Figure 1 (cartoon, rainbow, N blue to C red):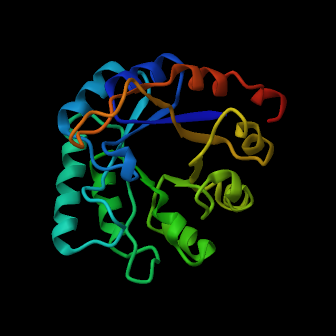
Figure 2: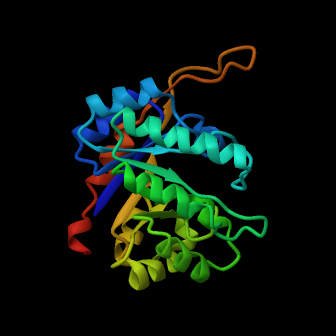
Length: 235
């Protein structure tokens, strides 16, 4: 089993590297599904983690449709991620019908030119037809797909994720994410899914006043619980 930690801090990237995680999905604003992290955070995570750093390219919350101006920003952010030393970028654009948009192709091409791996993120879980969507994602040349199987939590979408793995796993790396935890992680392995993605965060103290958010720290215990499960007895 391979593991990816979704984190918004250097601490998380360092800890994941020490525990042998294969990759990091690095974001800011995890409370809204993850937005593009700043240059300094990317560089520090690259410099201090043994895991591959894959950077979220999503500069605004609220959906996955983009304008021409948005595309300009995304291209600049992809170039900045490369400059900071990232190993890959994570994005996904949908059209007005929530189908995988043609504009993804140009961003994949840019990433390839820069030597970056590409992941189509959970925008995939909003598509009306996942079989049509995966065929387009593969055709556009994405290296990886992160999905919860079109469900709010991946445990409910295991059948779809397993089908994607079985049918397309030789063409694109399928990663299951959203709600993965100690209690359900072995279910994914038992379904043939080979890559798990999860967050591991817990509040450090109470909410800061005046709407300034909450300090979060990496939940090392959750990481240890999941990676120590007997996946090798199932695979």
